[in-house]
Length: 169
Ligand SMILES: CC(C)(COP(=O)(O)OP(=O)(O)OC[C@H]1O[C@@H](n2cnc3c(N)ncnc32)[C@H](O)[C@@H]1OP(=O)(O)O)[C@@H](O)C(=O)NCCC(=O)NCCS
Image (tube, rainbow, N blue to C red; front, side, top):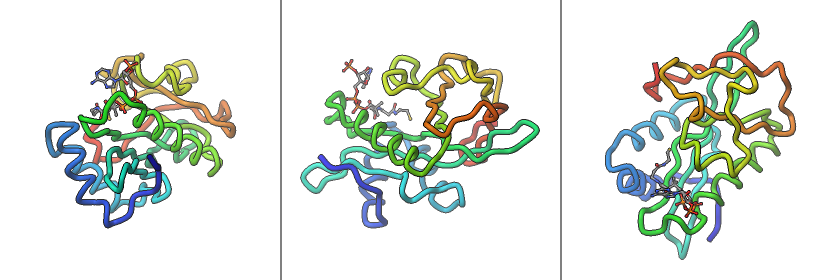
């Protein structure tokens, strides 16, 4: 298995992968919107490839962290592995590869809204612990997590605001 940045020739396979993993078109639409926005980071939209087939996909893109200051920080979403290839470490390899690339770019942190049983193994912690608040009070504390990277500083706190494409607000 290799992990590499997506290219336009992968887009169709990614679309099919997202539809089969999520059972709908919302995430495909989200990924298309992200690619068209200036929050998209080409180096941080990754595919896992096995025998020339795209079997996994992950996107890290910019959201805003607001207090008296504003920071652009990364959020992980969406992420998917082909149903028949799940639970073999592909998702984990994608998360690890993305975190490493984000750290290499000197990004301070990565936000995720996701399963509280899945992400802590990659070093994600409840965001509230660091004064990082979700966009809406409806989001359970345990599901809103942050992975601090080596450039993290305590200045990076406040409320996370997602671009409209995420449909969060
Ligand atoms: C979440 C997802 C990306 C994980 O990818 P993966 O390659 O299966 O993950 P890994 O093999 O690295 O890790 C496996 C662990 O993930 C969790 N997991 C994966 N699939 C799961 C499932 N269907 N049900 C419950 N837990 C699951 C388990 O904790 C599992 O560990 P275990 O096998 O020791 O119990 C994949 O299951 C998926 O595409 N799910 C549908 C889409 C989705 O929900 N995406 C996340 C929200 S954006």
